[in-house]
Length: 160
Image (cartoon, rainbow, N blue to C red; front, top):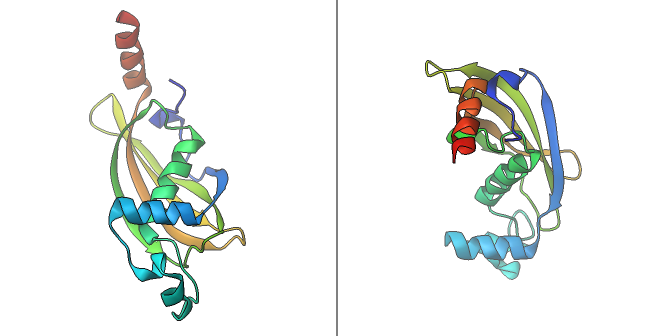
């Protein structure tokens, strides 16, 4: 287990993910997968006449990429139990084809629950483009193992 336990998180700590460029393939694949074929995402001629002037990535694709960039930070690998919610998510600016985005995650709170094996982690997630503009932001809440919970998991795995 290489992730952090709830006791290891420090309120106010900030982590920054690797970056990734949003491609036409990403958007086309997400359109197919989600069924959202809005012409703002899929029709270059239509979107050229729109207020944006070009095709844009789906807002939900940005949110999905934020979860992937978060996973890439590695600090919840093996210690995350469950996603509990996404709150106050805002789509502040469009994500354009060719934008390079990264995630800035700030620990808002990290507390144990009444169950000794788990805690609740709340992070402010900010998805930024290559110009440093926050394009999406919100709170992600995750149930995370405590040190006692991680020890119990490792004990069970060792017994196998």
